Amino acid sequence: MANITAAMVKELRETTSAGMMDCKAALAETNGDMEAAIDWLRKKGLSKAAKKAGRVAAEGLVAVESSGHTATILEVNSETDFVARNDQFQAFVREAAKIGLMGNGTIESLEAAHFPGSQTTVKDRLQELIATIGENMTLRRIAKLEVSKGVIATYVHNAVTEGLGKIGVLVALESEGDVTVLGALGRQIAMHVAATSPVALDASGVDQATIERESAILRDKNAGKPDHVMQKIIESGLKSYFKEVTLLEQPFVHDPSKTVTQVLKEAESKAGKPVTLKAFVRYALGEGIEKEEAPDFAAEVAAQAGLKA
Image (cartoon, rainbow, N blue to C red; front, side):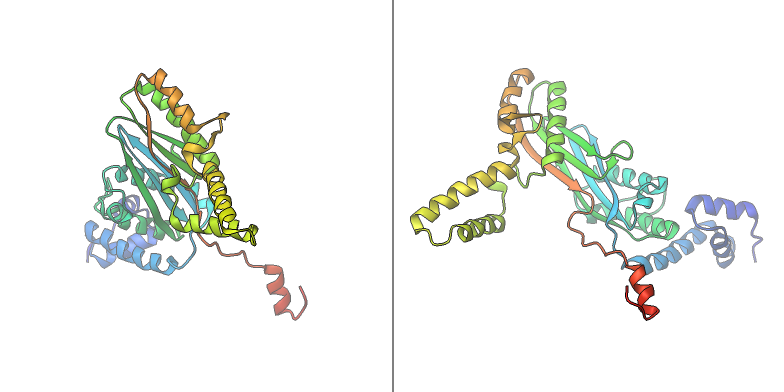
């Protein structure tokens, strides 16, 4: 039986962030073998994390990271906003976004990637974090944009720290023009995207289901009109809809007298070359996640007491 010293427990605790008693137990179980103890704690952490996996994680952070002509945006969820302010959680999200720059833009490739400074994958590191912090966390979604020439501008709204916040945006501008001009323009457009939440770049990017839904609404509003009149109403209504929800046709928030397309065209003279808005991505934290309603404790207590709430 190996002699488990306080120094060994301290080293294991600093390496894994696990509790002191868990570290002591791990070393005892593995006869003082540090690597085996780390694995023992990881397995225990996975067990703990599994119990938390059913909890709804709709808080957390959106991260943006860029490097040259490549950028990623990542959403990592937690159960509470309190965890989003945790230094360990923030460090993990930031590092995971950087790792995403080298992947193919999928969660699967990110999960399987090596996490720097450890002998684990990103997925395993997240499981360890779940065990340490005590909340369910998920790598929800990631996107990656690239341009051959030009810039990818980034913007974070409601930032809690550099590159981390509640809304993140990437805007890819393809151009051989002045990078400084492109960078300033890209950031303005990214701020516009954060504010207006366009559904697509242009009308061709709006999915068919959305078009059919909007058409059905127009039909219902104008029921009884002749077919040839109805067709014109739908065409006109969809044009108005596209102006509202597609990025290139939207009035520019910094100058509503111009569309984003017009702003891009005017920027070409300053940039010295044609400018194409290639793509954009906007993530708003928790969008689309069905959150659990907070329990009505007053009603519960009243019910248990046989009283009316």
